[in-house]
Length: 125
Image (tube, rainbow, N blue to C red; front, side):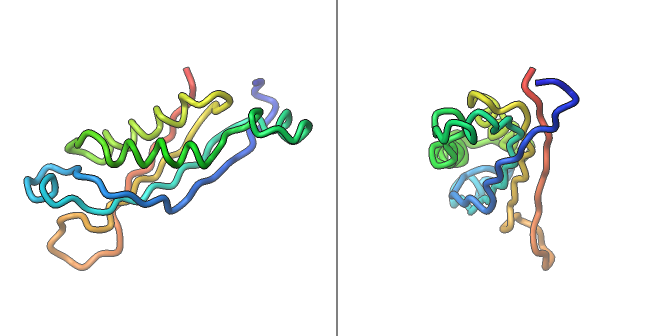
């Protein structure tokens, strides 16, 4: 896709799953909820023209794949988990770039807070 044509966006926000990620033993043992927002950069013109689901990203299947990553192999850092989620999105045909925001609202911080999140941007190589 040329630089002159901006990409369209497909957003999936607030997807929740229980994972066992973190540097502390109790995080690995007890787990906690993670919330992910993804914004996909796509060219949706073919899908719009043909009204054909196979010409775009099936966000229901993508959601299932993202939940499997969150529920999968534990990692220490949310940066690592965010990268795995981005890789999962970029593996989908038609996804040229992705923004992933991974929230860890129950992070082990001894102060009152609303959220901890990391946001990464990745492009297909």
